[in-house]
Image (cartoon, rainbow, N blue to C red; front, top):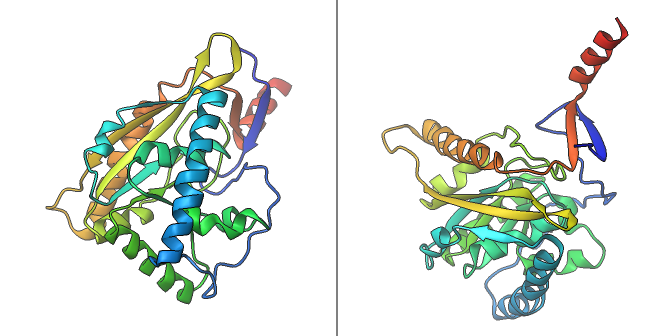
Length: 268
């Protein structure tokens, strides 16, 4: 199969290929994460449930023939807060799929600052559930207070631990265990979902099939740091297993040093 595009990368942890040119705003003590007021909840009901949710569902069905496998795993935790982790491989779909996976939970997504920095859309992202990572200590307090509030509301907190978007990437990149401290702090069940790209008979656009797994719990016999690593490893290993179900590769990612070595061999 010929690859329509090749991307060369150097750093699996930090390279970003989202392709946008949005200048991120500072997430400082002045950033408003939202609250539980009547005003906020009314605005969220409109923007999130009435406006965005049906459009997201329709887009995913028409564009990617989106299908979710084992969504009942999270539904069994209705009325309980959960943390959900996933691979980060699509600019638009990754903003929409968490709500589909976690329904009927109310879903909030931990994001980078550029996701809330758009001139118009940035004004409503708090109502859509965006929780941008903080840039200073004061903002960190606000972020953690908001996270605690949403957990108390029995919400689903969505995290992309790979942090950077690699469009249509079919593997799982290494990620740290830092974000896994949150479910341990709040004693919440952990789930993951893995988006895979699969062939469609009469379209070049692949089908997205999302596999949901969990719940995962850390071994209580371990100390805090070991438990954090343990639950990260459980999620990472399951996502790697699910990634093998990809059968379409639209973009080939090649490590720069590997390509240089190959070129040297060809030149000899």
